[in-house]
Length: 103
Image 1 (spheres, rainbow, N blue to C red):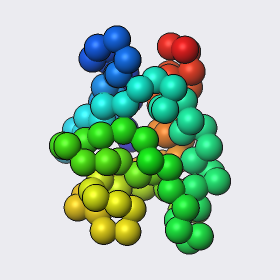
Image 2: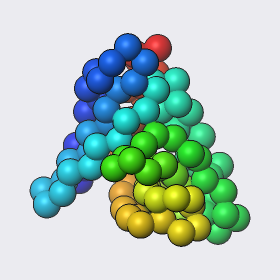
Image 3: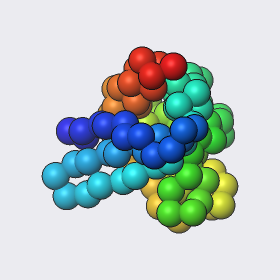
Image 4: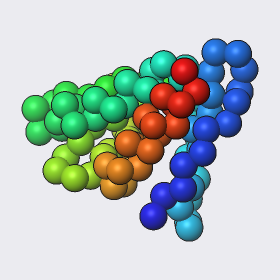
C-alpha cells in the first residue's frame, strides 16, 4: 500500500509525496501536469509509451503502465532511468484525482 498526499510547494507546483512502510518519494510537478496522469492506461510500457510528468532529485519523471501496475521511472529519459518504482495503478489514479480537485 502506498499513501498519497499533495502538498503545496509554490504558486505553480505541488509536491506529490508517495509513502510506503519502507520508502518515501517526493515528486514536484504542476497540478495540471499531474491531472494528466488519468491517461496512465494509454502509457503502455510494452509499446514504449510513457508520460513525462514532474521532477524528482533533479531528474525528469516518467510514468508508464504494465498490466495493472504503474511504474515511475526517474532519470534522463524513459529508456535509461536511474530509479524505477512499481506500484498499483490505483495509486496513480489517486494522484490524478487529487490534482483534479485542486484545479
